Length: 342
Image (tube, rainbow, N blue to C red):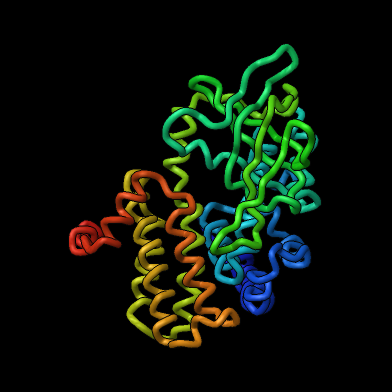
């Protein structure tokens, strides 16, 4: 395991505790993340967390990225969720050999530009809902991309469209036009992150905007190996709930769950992620029960965290994670926990 940069993690914890958490209820009710919230993360340098040093990034180890992400999610999940989408285009710009490296790698690493992603639809079964067809000068994208977060705050969106058994990845300007329109979705939690469904109507994508074309099977395998990253979201929310709750057996369970997912193999990751989802629900529910009736007031942190825990049950969920979630949540806990020990 790579070494954790404790200074970066401590900076993230201080940012979360002193600035993000005190404003989290206000952000939740605002309808959109105030730019000032995102600027706090930028000023701390965390837009460069996912980029290598040659582009002005931090070159942080995965373990450092996970810990920083957890801390910021425990401060304000809405703000964190908009910021975390930045990882996709930042990495894509740094790794491509095409023109998008020159245009976006340094601005994304510095936070001068902010990025988002449009690829959640790749995990949907059935016929692809966003398709790419080749033209003489590039590609035409047609269909929809649901769950694109941070609309209105991002400058570029890393977009995935299916072409047969392949995926065409392109970095597109996050601006509406005649062939690219958005429809805002209304969510029960982190609604202020401004999540939209994008509609593409033969939207022209130039070849220079394409960062990669890869086999769908190759991407699916990489995605399976990368499930640890978004586990930082439930870890952050559960950690905040246990801190507010005070000493309880959940503290050790949280530590054990964190250690488990940090050391999990790709085969073990779905179950380890589901354990985090279950723990997050139980920790936030315990906080609601402890606070009592006032926990339901909109000015109470308990109800916000509980709603976020429900959101995280489906965010980034694969069929395998869903299977383990249901095992835990429908009373098959003894079976699930026995496999935890094995």
